[in-house]
Length: 112
Image (cartoon, rainbow, N blue to C red; front, side):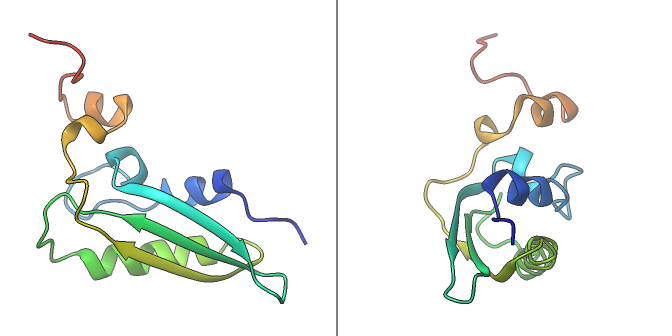
């Protein structure tokens, strides 16, 4: 059995698109934490902590189900949990440079 790695989980998260913005959840900066623990049966439990671009996002359940389905498709993943948190509050500075470029949002480190 090969171990589940954070890199393999991130690769799957990059396939989970935000339903309203044409950017994946990872590059939007919505994923705050990934915890992988091994169960007694040798499978892995993956816990993903994330936020939303807006607190009342109606697509919360859809995003959680998409994450669970994609991450669970990895070999040796037994259980996937998605926890939503409100702090810290998401903002565009959390986006990857690639995501900001795609959406034409200036780099937060550059003052105009």
